[in-house]
Image (cartoon, rainbow, N blue to C red; front, side):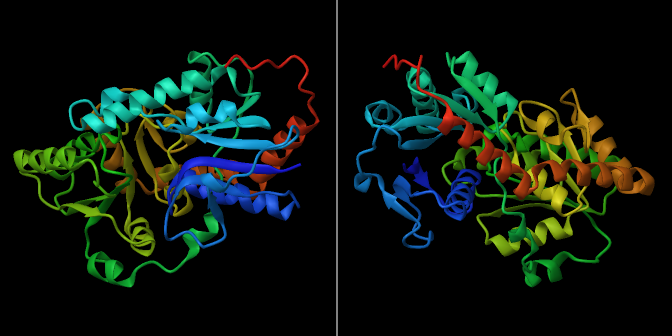
Length: 366
């Protein structure tokens, strides 16, 4: 019996890619015959870790494919024709409405992703969803198989690496309050609301403050230009777009952060929230999509999208030491729920249960 992973693109350093690599390590440590297959493989991935989909062998009756579903791809239509038993690992597909005003290709890819998700509804014997939010999305799209929730496996040891000293030296200990948000510059992240919140915070509470928006805008240049125009319109200073940067530089911005500010409108999980927790950075967030679930009652969450309120919360957690300590303590407790060993154990439990489960009663509708 083989347990292989399949996905459209194995990228370096993104949430799905890290999840795939973590699962690969778990499978190998537990002596499963395994391999990763992808249509596209990032050149920075160590050779031998993954092979191209064209090299994927035929699958036997008892072999298992873990298919990572997150975007529009022809693999969504090829999967039902492959042999073996199918487990879909669902990472969500950002709805096309977010991309429509800015990038027609991204909008079309999202629409294709929705069609692919629906096409696979009858092909999976079992699903793992990153969050309950993602599980509900599968159910809305017609999935009637068993679905369990399993958080993304996060390599927390990587965050213990040395941060970029140049970045630290440029901004450390200068009396400024540093507000940080990490994530791709893309409309569903609502960076315009992060900017507006910072505008209110800087104007009404603390002029000696700066905002770092850490993430690449590759493919979303039109949205990025709109954000730049918005900064100029507001007349707010000290807003920094880092663009694509090395991992050590990302670690430096987390190390500098006094507050992590998340105003995202759509997340299937939101890994940066856990990254901020791991650096003991208090979080202020708008609780939409999976953000509420990932926070799990920690951080300072808002039920309504209100940038003026968010600015006030930022000020509270910066100036109220006791509140800050309580927020960080609650975040540490929540972070423990995502411990690598704990999530790994849950993955193996689900996989072993699936292996033992008989296929009786399962019928592919495609």
